[in-house]
Amino acid sequence: VVVNGVVEADDTIRVLAGIFYQGVIGGCSCADDPTPASEINEYCEVRLDIDKGRATATVALVTE
Image (cartoon, rainbow, N blue to C red; front, side, top):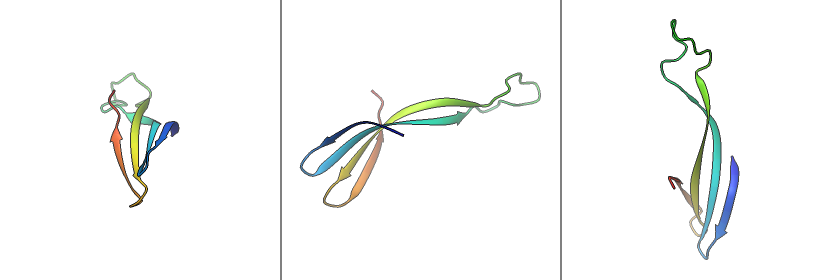
């Protein structure tokens, strides 16, 4: 996880974070498949809105 930015308001902290992970390609590594690896490196960005008063957070995938 990489923190790309943090913005603080009166009642909320908004964090933009990038997540690196390995996804799995379905159907790979079959008997006739020449591809030796079925994992692929991937990346996505999420926005976390943290409510200061209630200590709760919501997470949303950033699609921009």
